[in-house]
Length: 171
Image (tube, rainbow, N blue to C red; front, side, top):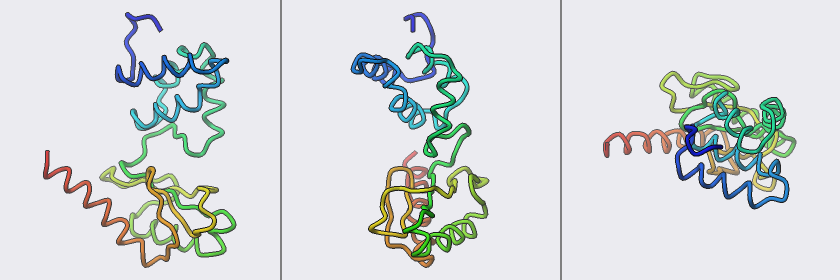
């Protein structure tokens, strides 16, 4: 990117991207890390994010979209402040993963890929979060919760709602 071009990313993240593309022998190898960092900062992979990442790497936007659509952890529309991912792969499924998902859906009033009206939570069923030994498990943003039962769900949601309330008090 030329210095006079406006970036959709913070200066810190733009500098991180510049360093990333120099780290790899092929610039394209930086694509997935860049998409993850971009999603963390912007919240999802908007058209502007995709366009800028493509330009920074030197590939076309369709190539970025193709790669991004392969990974379930990458989103093309905004999620809630806390994205609840419930694993329903075989280990979690056999130990009650669908019951956990159903309880979150009931408590939040949304289904798969849904976002609560206040924007605090989003919910999705995912194939695997790599916590099979501790099934059933969920991931909320980057926090893991494991060995769950449906009875754990209200407490988990209360924990994250409290974080929002505490932040509002401090503001």
